[in-house]
Length: 83
Image (cartoon, rainbow, N blue to C red; front, side):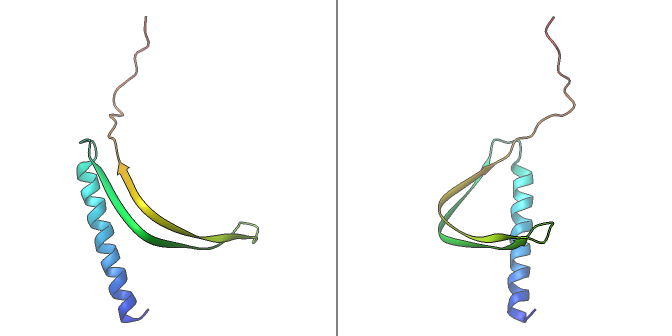
């Protein structure tokens, strides 16, 4: 990996850590994270299935907004059946 690729990877790691921490703090508070993209191109690499068969690849282009929300659920609450 060359120096430029290392810098990009470190930058991406910091951004993903920051977003994850922010989202953890906002979960359960009715918050959402909104991303707006203009001509974002995502290359999905070629995939190989379990039998060695070529599954294919893809290229996605995103123009618009993606909203991500999360909810916190109390798993300690027991359901009561009506009598």
